[in-house]
Length: 97
Image (tube, rainbow, N blue to C red; front, side, top):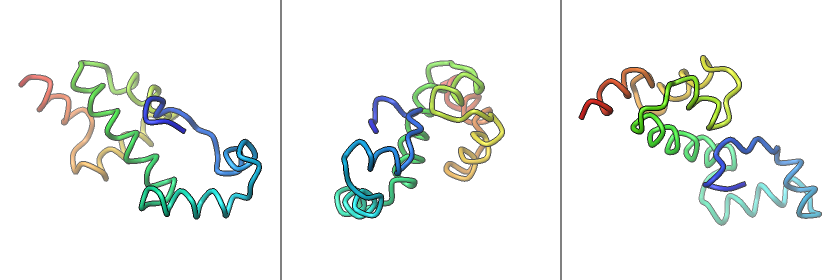
């Protein structure tokens, strides 16, 4: 799991297996270290990366795939919930600046 690879889709179970520990230990340790759940952190990381990519002029579809969403509509929904505007509206507002 890395800030540099927001599209990393490994599950908690996969991460626990890599660390040779339980999923509960991974979840507890992650929350203690990051102050949020792995899911919350993953969404935040993906949305931060999406903003940078949209500002650089990437298409919504390309951004969606790069940050780990296989369905562009799911990406649009999460982005809109997170920022209060759609990725298309965000791009139109910030790319033109």
